[in-house]
Length: 535
Image (tube, rainbow, N blue to C red; front, top):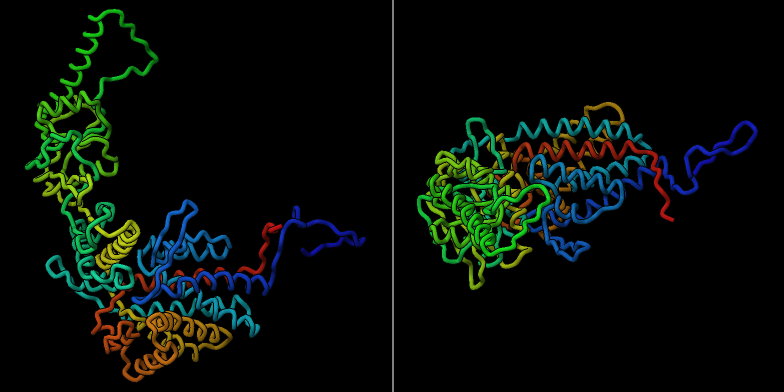
């Protein structure tokens, strides 16, 4: 820590408790920050693309997560370094905004910083590098809009949407049944989408998983699945044309709010108390029957006595259903959530064509399917798989696919994947750099170089010769002036991503460039780091 001296040569303290703090400044600070960010980017580099590797992370509780999703890996990694945390937030913001491309954005940011380090060694000022990057990113994003293609889809012709979702799923664990899962994701999004307003509410899509069965058994249910069963084993397991009372009040006698004590000193008093309780239950069940309900779904539990009465009166019931599920059931069936029995009226009941209980395998696992709803705006994707980890990873993959389908409905412009967009942007930025006077041109060339990191990583992860493959694709793009040529990761035999049907959303790609450049500019501008000392 630097000491300051007054005019008499006596040292004085500037920072409180400065002997307990470590301080790095100037070029050293920038180098240290760049190294931390590069370390995080290097971890994710190997999990990019269809042949990318998965990472296995163990939490302090011993829970194991196996994932290929950049945002999930960084969330679970528990990064301690401040700059490392910036990279974690970078992938998180890409996840929140777009839902896909979380690995690519970190790899791009890492490559930009790697190039910036070389420029710093040449003695170029960090601010000039940041300005050059900013100019280059504007050019790149503009070029993306020029090479993007719009494709038309409708609720009848969903194949283009399915193809784009398949590109997202091809880099995940579930790529062997990617067509089926992509189709499920697109149908789910279209079921809840408002195509006139180009708006999709993903909260209406519930993703539910159950261990057992195969990945191919995953299905889309046009309704709601609740992980509960009927409260009494003898209640009917299948109800057609159900009228559903959705309650948030318990099937119990009311309890006074104040502290109370009941003295019972004779059999008659006990009998009358029991009679009173039975009457309460009777009235409750009767109110449900009078409203015309044929199924009761309750947020709370009920006594055995209430259960027995419901069974006797032929009124099937489900208890302990969570609040979120209740809301989804209400949306799907067009019912109202009722807080008091007295307020139950026939208009407040939800309607469903079929409510059935389904059991799985040899275990006693049962789930309730509510199908053929009046307003089938809420749907459920029901995932099956060999173990819990596969199901969790499939849920994450489905989230990515749903986000891609939603983005395409909002903005149906696409660019071609396989690193073709990056190579094309790199060529344009490189050409533009020659026309820029001043030091910024070096930064722009570095930006173009950094954009090659994504196709390079794709080639590396696919077991190809990275430099040979990349240079071949670049020269082919220049010769044929075709921005759709990328890395042939799956050895299909053609470099043309248009023929391979590898698409990415335009807004996803633009967001990647924006976010990566912003974070890199921020890291480059830090020249003094004061941290509490480790000792």
